[in-house]
Image 1 (cartoon, chains in turn yellow, green):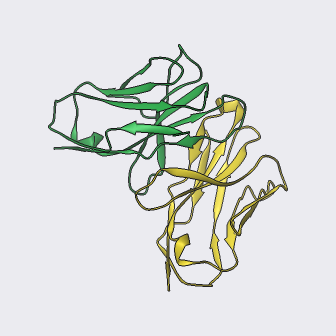
Image 2 (cartoon, chains in turn red, green):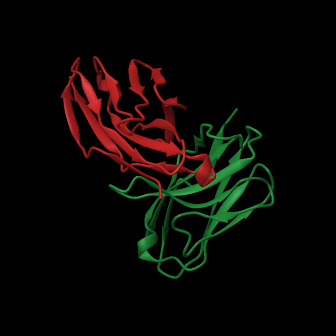
Length: 113
Length: 113
């Protein structure tokens, strides 16, 4: 079956530091890959996505590249802000599995001023 | 547009009590989903409805039932609540095409004593 593994948190950073959150996946088909973000007390919202190998998703200064050879979709941001403090979820959607989302366990990021 | 709305925001139940969580979307989406979120486990799919009139089990359906009342509304029912069902429940919707984004509601926090 499909699965998503992401690094456990919490990740604590200072403002303007570089952020990387690792994500690897296992899928039976050719999945689309997503990063969702959950701010405190809110639901999840899409941060970025990539639908095929070598695609780069980007939004709000965050980037992730779909690497089929390493089955990875690592999230990066060059200079984080306090407002980036949230829980980040990596997920995949596989047409062979009916397009249902499979989530990783989430990584809590805390950015300190 | 309100997007995806959920009621109630918070609920406390005693073991054995029943309740229904309500979800509605105003985006004319075909597909709707119910997830539960538990610490360190990401989101797990309980039930989903690919289109009006259809429902299917997800990863963790035991102890739950659903009703797709119409295209807008998708309710989740706990017939006899158990402490193991203490969780945060999220409803989501998507247009229904392949590999597309899901849109999440703000969540319902449920405590079963």
